[in-house]
Length: 472
Image 1 (tube, one colour):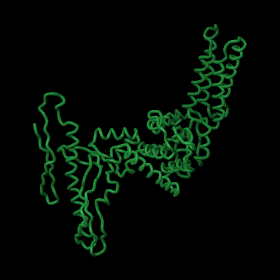
Image 2: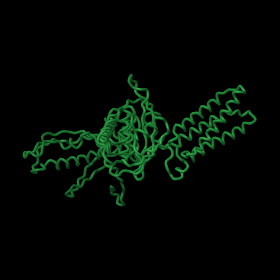
Image 3: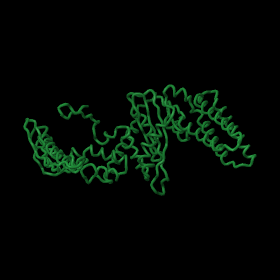
Image 4: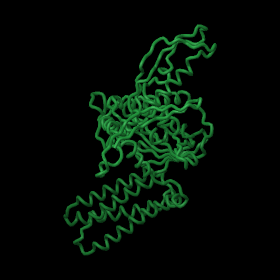
C-alpha cells in the first residue's frame, strides 16, 4: 500500500499551492507491527514538512526586508549563502542572502537570516537540550534526543553541556547585575517563610580545592506569589550571601517584610539566619529534625534495656512516659516562659543516669546505655543551643503555619541529589556547581523558557472542525 503526502499553502492573494513532501509505503495489516507509521517514517515526514514550511517562511522574510525602509528601493543581493539551522526536527539548510546597502545611505548591508538566528538554532531545541541536560547526564540527554528526534550532529554531550552552561552563565550575569543595582521591590510582601538547609557535593580532584563543596539552598514562600527555590555555593566567591538576598528581593522581599526562617538548628544555619537574612527575621527550629532526634533517643533506650530482668516492663513504661512528656511539652510549650520541657528532660536524664549506675554496679556491658546517654546529651545540647528558636508547635500547626522543613529535604533531592550526588555520582568544580544550580533552580521555578528565548507556554486546543487553534 502506498500513500503520497502533499502540503498545501494559501498565499496572501488566496492562491493555492501544492507540494509533494514524501511517499509512504507500508505492507497490509497482518500483524501489530504493520499498524500505522514506523518511528523512522515519522522522523522523515516531519523533516520534509518542516523543510517546505521553512522555505516559504524564509522567502517571505527576504521579500519583506529587501525594500529599503527609507526610500522603498529594492536592495541588490550581494551574495547567496546557505545557512544551517538546528531545529528539533532536524537540520535546515536555508537560503540566507546578504543584501547590499541602499544608495540612499539609510539601509546598511545586512543578512536578515543571520541576524534572526545568532545561535544557529531554534529556542525550542535549546530549551529541550537544557531541560534534559539539567536533569540527567549530558551524554544521556544527547542519547535520548537522538533516539526520539531526527539525527543531529548537535545531539552530543559537548553541545548539550555548552548550551546548559550558557544558560547558567546568563542567569549568573543577571544575578550579578541585580546585586549591583539592588532595585526596590514594587509590591513587597508582608510576610515570607524561608526554609534553608545545606548540602554537600563532591569536588573535583585538585590541590587547592576541598573534598566536598557546601551548597546553601532553600525555598521561599509567600501568600499569593507561589514558592521560589534558590541555591548558592558557599565558598565560590564573596557573593554567596548576596545571591541569597537577591533571591529574596526577586521573590518580593522589601524593607518591611517579615521573615520566618526555618532550619534544622545547626550552628551554620543559625549564623546564616542572623547575619545573611538580616532585617525583621525570626528564626524557628523546625519540628521535623527535632522529632527525629527524639525518635533516635527512644530507639537507643529501647536497645539499652535488658529484657531478661524482671522489672523490664516497668522500666520501659517509665521511659515511655518520660519520652512522651518531653515530646508533649516541647510540642505545646516550646516557647513558654515556664519551660516545662526542661523539667521533663531533666527527669528523663535522671532516669538514664540511674539506669547506667545500676548496670555499672552489676558489672554488665555499658556500651548500649552509654550510647543512649550520648543520644540524650546530643538532644539536650540541641534544645538548649536553639532555645531562642523554639516555638509553640501545636498552636502553629493548628493555625496552619509552617513548622517543619520536610519540604526543604524534598528540595535538596530535587535540586542536588537527583543530578549531582545520590542518583549520579559526579565530581564538580565550584563554578560548575553554581551554574548547574542556576539552571536547575530556573527549571523548578518555571522560568527556564525565558533564558532559552522561548515565550510563555501556550495552551493548544482543537476545535470541532479540526482546525488547530492557539489559546493564550
